[in-house]
Amino acid sequence: MRLLNVEALKTKFGSEGKEVIGYSELLQACESTGVCKSVEEAKAFANVLDEAGVVLVFRDKVYLHPDKGGMQLVRHIVLSIVVVLID
Image (cartoon, rainbow, N blue to C red; front, side):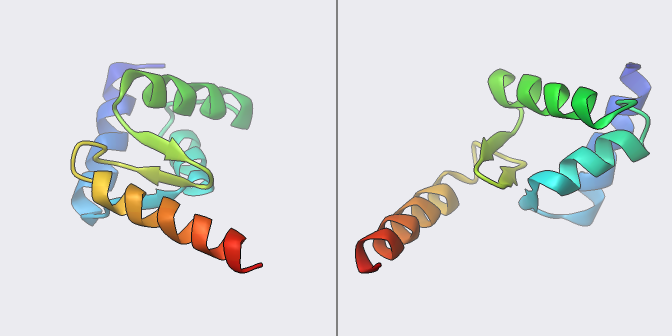
C-alpha cells in the first residue's frame, strides 16, 4: 500500500463532494485506486480508517467526514429505531 494511492483515494472522494458513501463503494474505490489488492485487504483497510477516526463506518454506510456527519448519523440511528418500533 503506497501513500500516493491513499492520496488518490482521498482526492477521489473529495472531488465528488460526497459526505456519505456505501461501504461497497469504499471497498471498490480502495481496489480501483490501487490502495488494496483484494476485497479482504480493502475490508481491513476500511477497518483501519474507521478505528483511526478518518471515516465512520456504520452498517452499510461510510461517513467520510465523521466530525461533520455526527447529526446525519444521529438522524440515521433514530430512524432505524423508529422503523424497528413500528414493525
